[in-house]
Amino acid sequence: MDIVELFPTQFYVFENPDIDNQQLLSKLEKYSDRVKHGHVISSLHVLHNKSEFSDLFSWISSCLESVRDKEKYDCDRFEITNSWFNVSRAESNMAMNYHRHSMSFFSGVYYVTHGAPTVFEDPVIHRTQAQIEVLKHDYRPTREFFPTPGKLIIFPSWVYHYSLPHVENFDRVIVSFNSLPAGEINFNLANDSKVHIEIKS
Image (cartoon, rainbow, N blue to C red):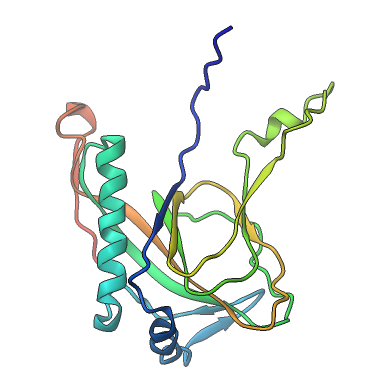
């Protein structure tokens, strides 16, 4: 018997042990003057165009380039269009609601601290909603990523996700971003859908 997995969803995990996450926390604290309070605390500052975060976002851009190269996307680059940080306070039960990222191609989460996991939903969740459902011993409709400082997850922006309630005795802090293809797009593969996009952020 051959098993063929059709159209799997790719997630990309990177680790950077060289980033000083304690120093990064101090830098992020400077931008806590403009935040939105909701299920978590979200920065209203755009981070990737600030010089003190250039090392972090330069590395993230190189990770996006690795994805572009590996998947052979016909575009010049993926460019970060927006970035922010989220904080779940210690022992607060704060949690990010179920959502996806609109106006983006790839999104990402960089873990500055440990904390509650990020949960991604099976994009073919409807397979569990058949009128006659036969349960599978090893099937779960979600997958969890547990935060480790220095870990970056890049994922398709359309994938729905959320975080579990944060109950540990320290703040959970992440940096998130969205990105779009930029420069020359589809020029090598499809004359009828080629386009040039410049990102202003």
